Amino acid sequence: MQQVRTRTRVVIMGAAGRDFHNFNMVYRDDPATEVVAFTATQIPEIAGRRYPPSLAGPHYPEGIPILPEDDMEDLCRRERVDQVIFAYSDVDHALVMHKASAALATGADFMLLGPDRTMLSAKVPVIATCAVRTGCGKSQVTRWLSRLLKGRGLRVAVIRHPMPYGDLERQAVQRFAGVADLDAAECTVEEREEYEPHLALGNVVYAGVDYAEIVALAAAESDIILWDGGNNDFPFIRPDLHIVLVDPLRAGSETTHHPGEAVLRMADIVLVAKTDSASDADIQRVTDTARRINPGARIVRGASPVQLDDPARVAGKRVLVVEDGPTVTHGGMPYGAGYVAATRAQAASLVDPRPAAAPEITAVYAQYPHIGPVLPAVGYHPAQLRALQETINAVSADVVVAATPCDLTALIHIDKPVVRARYEFAEAGEPRLGSLIEAFLKTRG
Image (cartoon, rainbow, N blue to C red; front, side):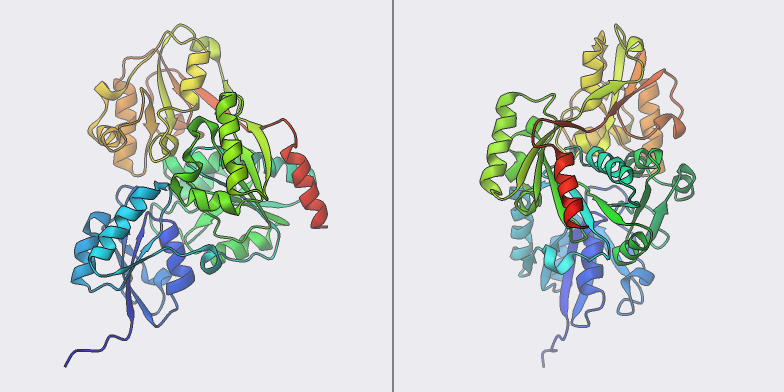
């Protein structure tokens, strides 16, 4: 007699972020569902661990295994999986459907969970900053918003899209008020890139794994919450005002990647970013697309001026450019602000780091062959951070231009002079983003 199955068996495909949140919101307390496993990609050394019992809840006393995404089809067949839930971001639409095809071929359903099932509510107003691709400049805008709001006397909390790359139980709820908090939490380069600039402004940053607890903590300590989005995902909190960036340096990508197109369709304000470095034709192209996709959204423009701390140290020199990691990896950019800054400062040459790359860095270039003659600042784990240091020091260059938002010299020893490239948001044209924020604040009393 065939055994009757009483629970729907589920696999969640993720990258240590959206996947855990979707589980917490939809499946953790559902007795009718059994999450067999998470699968992991994009982030090194996530697979092979377990989602801990303290976060998984009473239905999962042994936690939940996190397995490589490459094992997904065998896993579905072996465990007789009923549903596969896709739960990570900044992947092109075709790749999502390839993953769907693989899941369907095993007999399982393939699903995406939407905002209504996965968004939390906050007791204070929420402004969310999201984008159609990684590397559009979300964090610059969030920092600019924090200065504007604090200038109006408001207590501001910044909640960051999750980056739980270490001990998940320890990282369940994180509150960062100073650099010492980052050190205590053993934050990776990627985490520091996002948190350090906020801390320099005096912002308190919240992040972690259990966002119901995180939102409650942040709301208790603030008058308004800023959601600082990750990749091109939509917010974990229901926004009262939703700002979405489009990038004219990647014109056309507004509708090619998941869930960026959905995010664009959800926007209250579409911000055309980087107008100081893009062509008029590409600015118009992304503007036209935004109007077609989301005719009800207000459209504003912004710039991302890049400044070198000491341009004279770069002029005429052989330069190694270290870029913000996610922008030039899964963000799809061949280079970023560091390349632009070094070129404008009239560097004699930009040294390609590939010939000197350590094996861990060579693997990054192999995974992302579009990257130009720049070095992505990767450091998801200690071995990768050591490989970054080894590569920088092995490159024959006069100076390093570091465009990562964190201070690399505080994390690794670099045997060359380092000049930091910094970039912030600036308003451009009319209507101005500030005027729309002021109007929003008036409607909120």
